[in-house]
Length: 303
Image (cartoon, rainbow, N blue to C red):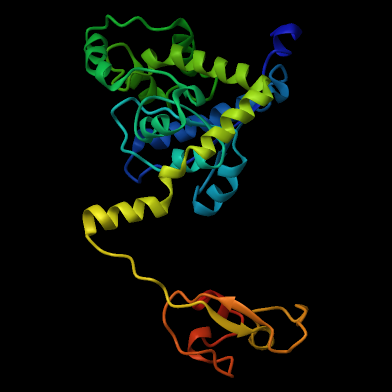
């Protein structure tokens, strides 16, 4: 890559996270390939800091709480018609992360709420999938040369033992590409180019990010639960008991509030708290029912 070309590249760190089901052999192999590619790319002197690849093991909610708010772009790229309406892309959109993806799963609903112009959509539509698969079986679907080159690199051992990844190559060979990766690839690259172009214009990127968050209200858990309650469960909301007034002095005594919280003019200065469930009034002992047996855990039990 020439210096002039390098200057146009938007630097990226690509983070992969996820777990393969115990019996999902190909998924485990893909994870292994990701790590092998990372080992090559991350030390390539020509690439340098323009691209880094990270796979985070044991992906979980705690890690998601860190990753989702920090992400600029989230990739949801399943073949159209193959994925249920998940929630991960909703969480990314709520946190101002822009989405690049196919018209599949919740991407369709998100597009309806935030607008097509605030996402980077690519790939086949669900209505096009079966005719395209017929072309794959007949080996009449033209394959992008860049996609073929990637497969050749894997086959040549650029990313480690070629025999190890042979099942992946076989699944993508002419006549076998059930998930239409070869078909979606050119439009995926075009969409990524649109991402780079937009990211260079930070005011435009920020505008899309804000609109993504502001348009995500429909995906709140409050709306979802209310709709379930009204249309499926047929139940009515019940008001929680509370709030109750508890003196700061009392809360300090049982360890819920630190001792350095200043009291007001009267030792009876109170904080208003809401109970999640009905319980007895606040007693005079740290061992009272609603606070549990230990002052250290009392704030997590009933408040």
